Image (cartoon, rainbow, N blue to C red; front, top):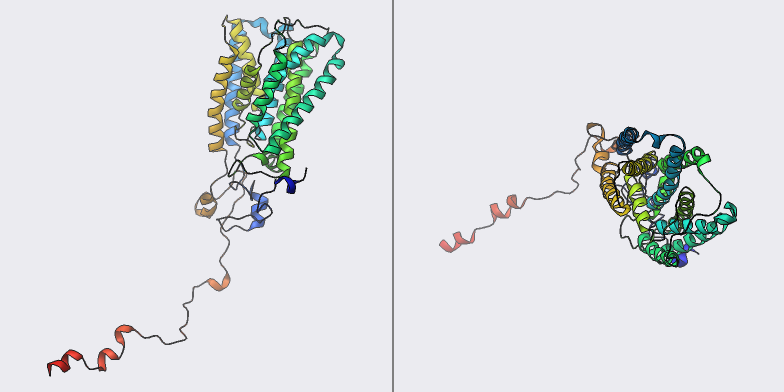
Length: 409
């Protein structure tokens, strides 16, 4: 699909960067995150560091509360089951975070995960490979169809994915009774490897997302002016790949959560999982607008939410997943406001301030005003080449006869 035929490329995309700070375009291209679109400057990461420290403190606190109330939950098989839950739910949060950072949030991840869990419960006795391969193909094709709908029609990802979620829910509602898990696959013996794999994906994804070229590439679909304007063929490709990847990650997370359960899988909408996963990704520091995100936030936020759910069950609490998902989502929206407020680049006024103001960018670069041209200093007054007459000193006021004197005579 060509960008010219579909109208992806915006007018002026190849034009040189403009700046009100009189900084050369070559400097803008090397220093600024998005010189041609959006506000210039490097994203600041200090807000993510502070927030991730707070998440780590919260995780340590909730883990200590769980240890105090039920120490057995952190030993033996219970600990291995907890690690599998973190890895399974972590894949859902990674799916949500990937779609958020590319500005095409995928609300179908919950229904996809539940559909995959039911598929695994019904077909698990055929072997893990026989179950995963068809599910992987269906998830990839479903993500591709969703991506094409988003980029061809250029519609919001949440709206298109909600339509896709409705189709998946229709498939789920063909079942009315809980489905017991069949097959002999038990992920608990490999719990530590699953947890480490999830942690590596989360941290490496955050590290790569912090690099300026990758962050610029991933965030190309984020609107910078009119959200209905197309963002180009590269942005469309990235958005489509992100929707495919998030759908596949959701499928794998659903299979892992189902394999870790001892009871049957209950059919439902699965949207509560979407709310919880998107809320956790926002809680991790990923912006709801796309592009911006932290490094360790997903790992800490997923662990915090999972340990909190286990601690609440150990304390005899009955918390609906909708309620915890709504609470996490609400806090995540506040985090998005903080990230957008304190993570955005410094303003052009700061860049123009030079040495007398805060003219530095978060990474230590400094921009000062370019020196004035040599022939403009000191200023030279223009030389008059033609004689000009002052109207108040014209000879007519001194030599012409005054008419009122003649009349008096």
